[in-house]
Length: 136
Ligand SMILES: [Zn+2]
Image 1 (cartoon, rainbow, N blue to C red):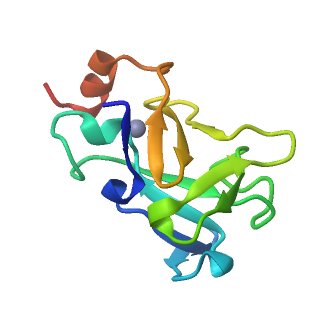
Image 2: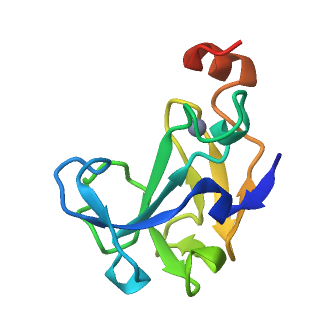
């Protein structure tokens, strides 16, 4: 599947409280309080076993909200849209509006108006991905 709703991927607005970006963050209600958003990987979500089990989390930090060297990076995005159902991750100045994971599954996608568009180029084939995840 190349397109899905962001809400399917259990997105949460997060505030960084460090030091580890995955453990060191807490959920916040308002985008104005948020430093970023986390959600399940839109590529791996559709691998067998489909769904949440075994699917890793993607964190996208918002531009200007966290130090440049904070992981994951170097990508940063400018959020817009009121609420996660219509969230857009826009390009920062001089940056890209797409999200590309370096290493691992190599997922590449955009988030616009609450819709995730998975882009065709990937760093890893479906077969490689299944092997890494230990699923047939
Ligand atoms: Zn993935």
